[in-house]
Length: 181
Image (tube, rainbow, N blue to C red):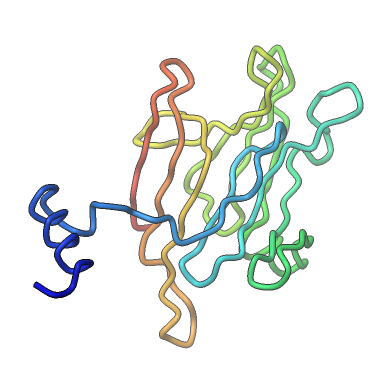
């Protein structure tokens, strides 16, 4: 065997089992960490990311009129932050939120305008950290990331599947769900 890289690949394949599991590389950039980050959405269509951050007042409470700030990070351009257009807010990535009066701390129930079947809760955890509790596998979990696989081969794009990544608010263990809307 004259090709050393081929030999190494075959060796790793035999040692580990299959080449695809050797190094699974995330093909999309991850937004920078933020103390107010609730979650973000990545899509198969390009590397631009829709970010959902808590909108806090000067005294670190959720803004009652608009508890979530949603915007793009345009990685396909210069990586700049850009506000959603009004069409994107109303048809695709926007949220509807409403204050929940039963909570001791102000909390907000909401849903995605493009997918109203699963409601979520935005609130501050006991340490004052903003979180979004979203149904993952039938239980409210802390949502961290959403991946949407989109089919753009037809006149109107359609969603093949959605993946939800989060963590259990009690155990801290990672949770995952994949579903077809």
